[in-house]
Length: 497
Image 1 (cartoon, rainbow, N blue to C red):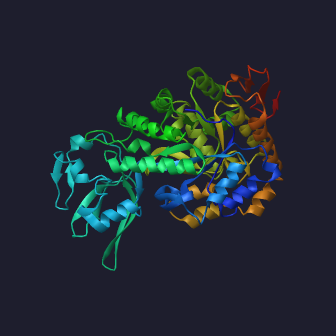
Image 2: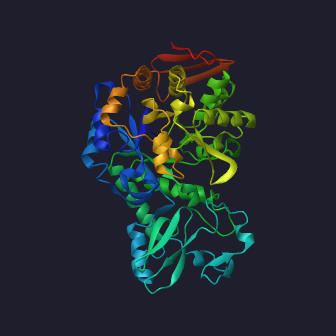
Image 3: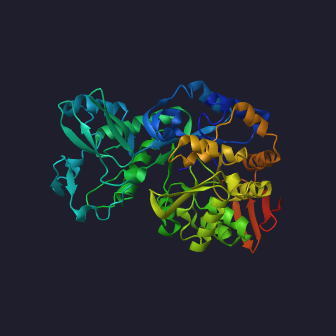
């Protein structure tokens, strides 16, 4: 699998101006010329109803946020797309689930979703509520994303209640004597109809101009009684191989997304299977390096990427928080604790793992605020990202030096901590921010990363670090061009030679 290695913008279709057409207009400005090769548009691009896009109803364009002509404008700029495909589940508002609740046993999509009782047949006892309670031996090692069993009682037209597998969010209520649903239903990967759906979805995504497909929640899709049912092996890799064969038909590169601690080695397993992997370690490692004035852990990680030939997409900020769970094993525990304390002191909010206290997952904050809203640190962080191995992904709010948005978080209510890092700018405000020195500096670095011949797929990369000094060199062995970043993590000065 291959992808161009130029910088990639990351935003919602309405992050600037309220519509993808406004972002297209933004990218057409002269200040943004020769900046981005790719654009990761988050999945509210599609029809969706929850989780700001990640609960997909169908993969048609949401015309309120994006049109075919907007995509054509991006193509005219030479920008390809990275788009999401949620393998594990679909919205209850999806046409498949709606067909199921309207037709029940007669629905052609009856097995499109996972009938809980069929799945656990022979593995437990039927409860008076009508679902099988699996024996403890079958679920003692299972990974749960919420309290209780992951099932939803679905009412068929004949009044029967049939349990279906539901790993994530669920809500039901009665309205005018009718059962209403909100949530995400797990897909049955043993169903031929699911694989027809997968193929059609990948074809559609490619038609939009996508070259990269981010696989969301893929590790939950393979299931079997008595297993963890998260990252089951080898079934997870068999699933990816099968999806990969479909993706190749449409010239798509897969990017499996998973958060796991460094110590678990999941990033390595993904790389060993021949896939690109997210560098979720870099955001925290850069902050640690800048705050502790040492290149030790950052340089070590960069060297590991080179030694093991790991292909990565890296980032500073993103639509989620700054990863903390991932750092376990790559940073000492006390350094992670200090990092969390620091980011909280700068206004960040800790998100715990699936609601479990003392199992930190991420800190929600803008990267600029996480750096103390210090322009020099932001400059250097971006410079380091540009020189690290991998394809650099750039969150629009980092580029525009956005600070923590407490008002948006407050409006979102309970559980709305992620909105701290999702400020929607008007097009006028975004253009105005292009004049900020911290933004201009980042644009220069991004333009250099996209256009300088030293940054080639086949370039030789050398990383060295000692105390507060960090040096990263790219050398294009074919034409002899090279660039070296020499950084001082003590005073945040750097030069590019």
